Length: 400
Ligand code: FAD
Ligand code: UDP
Image (tube, rainbow, N blue to C red; front, side):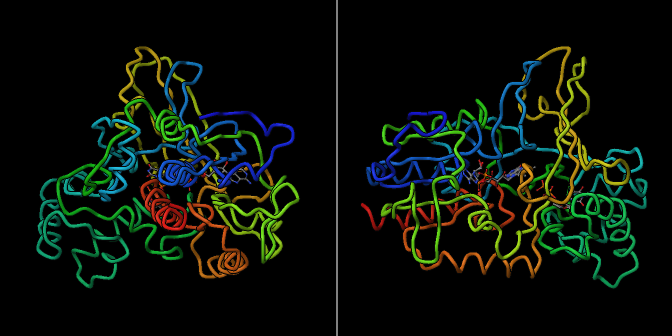
């Protein structure tokens, strides 16, 4: 792999069989597969000064490995995704655990058997738990919005407590809306767990952290003779899309284009901006061994921030006498302001706007959208990898 800062003078797009925009999972997986399976020469264009997209990690000034764009924990049910990524990294056995700070008491989230006893006391908590088991069965996930619909006084007691103390304030901070006002799939990501397992992803088949970090995983994936990476280049400076073709450096481009950035930006937001939430991430290094007992503590009833992550607790790094933590503050994303569009806001009007942008590129046969931004989806890492594997399958069929 070559990694260069900026494009060389006289950059010739026709020297490449594919131009890939973005060096996150979407772009990196497609780049590697096209290079490897079809011998295609690939240019990856990335506007940041690093590879890895939002999964990028680096060692901070205190020597602690941190995740620049928020805590990333690998988890998947997908055998193919796991097999593919495992070519480029080994995994630690890390199992993510989250505690909610509820009025000063730390309780497991997803809310489970232990949380019930902490919230209601041993005896009442056990009785309520048995009611949940009788209703849903053991080791079952129950989305809070589903639990709230149950017409039973004991189940309502649990639902009201969890809604108010786990979901309401956190969701207001994260989305500026109540849980009833957002797509149920979002709170459904963290269902009540009828069981004792206190992991955040209790049913994930594969889970862990890349043994040498995410950036190393991307270095390995992009390390191929046919892949060149150009950092610090905003593709909009060289790429223009119309409804029928794509111009790169002012000339029609005949190779494949894989785009993993926001679709509205390619059109100067001319139909309106696709709405997102962004985050302010405040990092702090403390002169102590450990700040909190688990990787992440969610502040569900107090504070302005949503959660605090302590990276050493996730990576297993040993660094006595110092630790780096990070607080996340969520707010509305302002387009073209230098902020990062982290979370698509899954509402009908926004999805319709996205559909209209997507329709514009539908007729350009060599232009392909993939990834959390370009598909305007709430994908975890494995979802993006699965989508990129599918797209690259199609392209490989054409080019091999
Ligand atoms: P990105 O990683 O965003 O990559 C797209 C790249 O394209 C970026 O590097 C961008 O700079 C580049 N780009 C965009 N426009 C242009 C342009 N015009 N020119 C050049 N380059 C451009 N997933 C999990 O599985 N587990 C987790 O624990 C987890 N935690 C998360 C925490 C947070 C706070 C967030 C926001 C996300 C989290 N995710 C997690 C989701 C995960 O980050 C994404 O699914 C994944 O990184 C998306 O990969 P991608 O390639 O689609 O997009
Ligand atoms: N959520 C909540 N309280 C919690 C955890 C999650 O209200 O303690 C809700 C909130 O709306 C959040 C959503 O569930 O946005 C999804 O949570 P997840 O941890 O999956 O979010 P992410 O890690 O993607 O930011």
